[in-house]
Length: 261
Image (cartoon, rainbow, N blue to C red; front, side):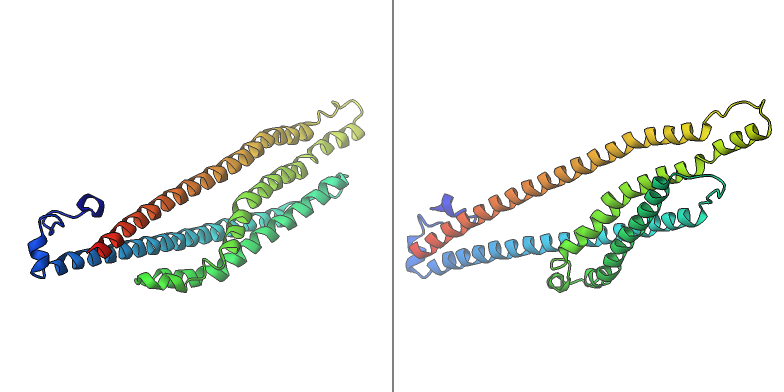
């Protein structure tokens, strides 16, 4: 019984302690079992509290990263939209202009939505995280608004950065395509001038060819990162279940020992 109940050194052993139990020494053993039970319960409670605080700090870090990234990238998109100068004499392709306007609008809207979520939730999470009380973690809204936090995190990192890469490509096409118009004007003024070399088109095409593998690598890395994160969470849940099972086995053994006494 002593090996099953993990009786520590110096504790009254069940075997050989009959005289103590007859003299009322059995109360010491019962107190030891009760104290061990309370220690296990309190340790389990503290582990749950630690897990809740870890989720709180992770949610706060995600909200901070989302707000910084969204503010930065949406600002760059607005500057690109305002500062880009269209050549009125150059016939831009209609598809290019429509794609640039749609990509810029969606990019700014996505990042501003992520920034809105972060701005609304982050102060409440910060207020609770600054309180040095273990039980105050239940006052934070990060558990109830977990889906909104993950949505802001995904918008600002995965979707927002992918749209920003597309925005860079479109801006390059708009800025580089009118370069060829100078060769055409020179050829109209001087028929003996050199033929157009399509420098702007080649430069824009080169940037697109470079950016396509970068976008593919970004998508592959994002999928691999989230899969690795999900596997890590699954392993952690399995470990927690095993720990809870061990605690249950120990509590069952102590309960049988308490009934035997």
